[in-house]
Image (cartoon, rainbow over all chains, first blue to last red; front, top):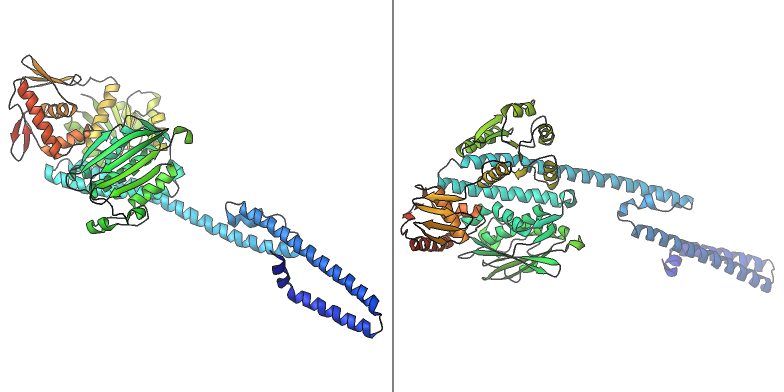
Length: 333
Length: 221
């Protein structure tokens, strides 16, 4: 709050005071008060008025600054009224009461929304677990079919699983701290898990997977890292070129470990590259091919941020895509 | 013949799994009523327990703890709950392995074999024999009639898969599937290259034409 704002805010009141004083001075002069006495009186009044206004200004400014500091210090701003210093006068007390009531309504709405979100997440998780039972049964039943039909059905089941898995991780990514366990994880195991989960798609797409330097361990949540890796493998298989090869290699980088997933597929046009991690973004390849959801890489980014993994992508159209995952040093966790 | 008891509430999975395991040469039993499961398990005296987590009435975790009170029978959890906390808890309660649905059938079988082996079952054979050829799995060599040759990992796995099914026709797709199980992620072309090399090795030790090509169907020993 600046002095000018303060004055313009009180202009009406000040004008009335000036008019009152002018009328009083005119009256006193008319009834014979000497001009010298009147001048002294007016000067004294002016000083008192100015003093009062200035002290009001400074008090209000200090109070506002105090309240602003409290608000700035709060994580959940809507809890302001609960945390504000005690009101100093009747007007403030009433005002605070109103703010508090508004805040309470807000807190209620927020916690309702949170509860609804949690319930929804629980529902999705439960649903995913339920759906996995029939998928497992279908897989077991497939075994009895002849090889050609089995392979095709297994492929379709694998696609269902991919969507189910994405839904599960989408729900989990909303509150990732709930089941994240950072442990020492062998990269070779991580890769074997991710490749194993997508083998139907990879084999069907004729992809050859080469691995190099995976005899290292990193500190991360194995399940989530394998999910990210799986999304990258899916993309490599989807947007493949002729004779597709995916190379998964690891190398130490200082105290970090860099895991690179490189393919020789269609690649991503340069102008689309900055947006591939956006939610719902499907590039020209995705649109041309169909079936792209624009969720996979978005989820990868979200989970990577939470796991403190570096996730970078580079690509050349027609030559392939390279995604680099950088696992943090142990100390950083 | 090891006996495996299946504790699983979904009838489709229970029946299919029993069928699968019986085809693999295991004896199976299944729990169908979920009262007094520990007693039923004890009565069946299995060598291995496949335990689902989400059972009607009682949680698989507490069942595991109960069974563990007076039995060292290996337990493999087979569940659709895949959170890390569930896995940690299951293993700390005395589970021997934790497999999430939907599982890969070869992976499930491999892990059953591994758990049974750890529990003191018969060891896997180290050599395979077929048609006068001996394959030494750990050494990675083949020998026939006093001559031997070294094989690469890929060649070894291909030959082992064919020798375990001597006489049968193995399709290229099944062969690729089997190699992926052993974390050899090859495509069709690479399989051809490996097959050519493997045949050359076999020819060196005096077995040309040991692996026959059945046009349009696959390979056969």
